[in-house]
Length: 342
Image (cartoon, rainbow, N blue to C red; front, side, top):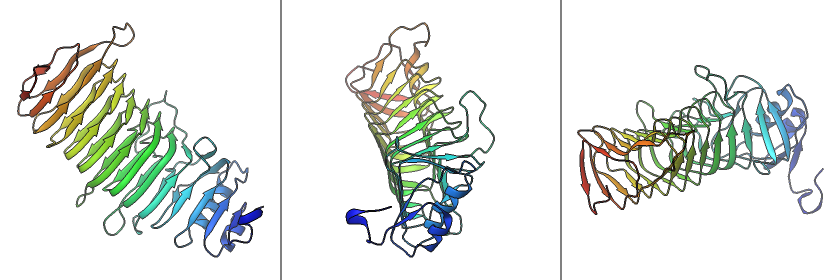
């Protein structure tokens, strides 16, 4: 029950789908039902999101769903905090998704944990589900998406999977022990991601890459971290993407990988206890800027030291300065070394 200043203010509290269907409009607060099949909580949340311009608050506790939560434009789904509100998928689908027939613009997802059924010790399933998977509707999009203060863990594919997203922000999101990438941005046949900002996001123990961006342009990653997996950060076919003060630890292949990209920048990139290569600049990657790179790589019997810190393939070009490293470089591309540190 709502009491005090909120009582009588047009708020509805949903414990059952019938109550959700009775809501007329406005802010909706949903309590977990305790039904472990997932049918009751999913029906209540989805019914609330059927309202135009829905703002749905999930109370403290665990919500269990058996189907993906589908969001549409101008909607907000907000929990009481990632440690307080948990949404567990017991079915086979994604956690939160969009539908191809509806636009997905001006959407906020915040303050909750999305938990899948994937165990990190198992091989990832083919075409497995993702925690959050948003794709374009009939026109452009998704656009003006905000995802913040969330944890996504235990999904067979990616924690956060965004297709052709523009003018959007992902902030303080943890993507943990998923079967694919922690954060994945890709394109359609006609549109790619632009004006995308990742801020203080953390990819931990994902099977593939911490962050993978395919065909993204004029976007940023600031103060992000990636631990474990094949690579910390992988940029493919990107233009004018800047990573500032981003770090990666205990990777298997490379801390930072750039392929077929141009005009991208790594400002103060940091690696710790990785294997093979710290920063890898692939062929056909041109006009890269690398400033203030740091290799922190103490000797360890459990995690091998880097074979090379900076690798540049033939056909690539980069400007480098202010590098602190203990492993050698392998520079087959054109590298302009401004201060001799490379």
